[in-house]
Amino acid sequence: MKRVLLIVVCIFCLIRLHAQFRIDYHTSYATYNMSDMKDFVHSVKSSEPFRQFGMELVEDFPAYIAHSVNIGYRLSRHEFGIKSGFYSTGSKLSVGDYSGKINISFTTNGYREGIYYRNYFYSLKSEDSQGVYRDRFSVWGEVSPAMIISTLNIKTTLTDVDMQEVVDVDDPEYNENGGSLLLQAGGRYYINRMVNLDLSVGYDISFGGNYDGLNGSPRSDWSGLRLSGGLGFSF
Image (cartoon, rainbow, N blue to C red; front, side):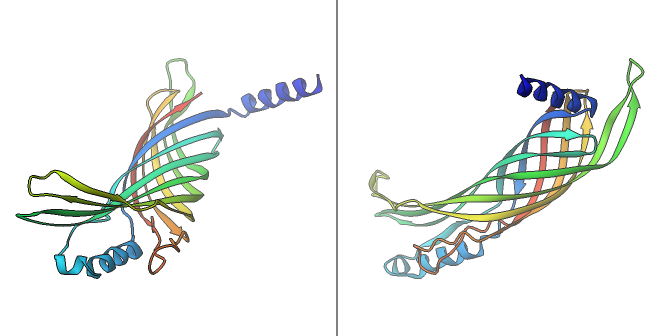
C-alpha cells in the first residue's frame, strides 16, 4: 500500500511540475574522421598480392545518414533521458579487366547507446485558443555521453569474365567498444501541444575502441559534424 501511495505522489508531483514524457526521432548528415581506418585500407591496398593487381580506392569512409532516438522527461527547462543512435560508413577497393573483377569492401557500423541532458535556455510563447500561453519556439543546448559499439566487416568478392560470382570470402566480424561525447545546439518549433520539429547542429567526439586483431590496431573514429532534423512527441 505504501508503494502504491508513493507512486501516486510521484505522478502527482510530475504533473504539478508540468513534466512531459517525450519520444524524438532524428536523422543526421554525419561526417566521420576514420583516419585510422583509411590508413588500414591503404595498407591493404599496398600489400601483396593486391598491390600487383593495381587495386583502386572506390570509396573512402564518406559522410552518411545517421539515425537517433531519444526517450526522456522534460521538467520545465530541463530534459534528460536515454539516447540511442546508429552510424554507418565504409570503404571499397576494386580492380577489373577482361578476365574478371576483384572487390574488397570494408563496412563499419556504430551502435551508440548513452544518456543526454538538454537545457531549453530560451522559449518564445504565444497564446492559444483557450487563452493559455504555450511554447511556440525554443532554443536548446545538449550534452550526451555514450558508449559506441563498433563492428567491422571485411568481404572479398571475385567474379569471372561473365560477372558471375565465383569466390566470396568473409573475414570474421571485428567488434570493439569505445566512448563518445556529443555536444549540440538546436531549435524546436511546436506544431501543437504534442508534436514538434527539431533542427540542430553539433559535433560528436569519439575515443577508444581499437581493433587489436588487425594490423596497426586501427579504430573506427566516429568523430565528426552532425546536422540533424527530426520529429518529437510529448505526452
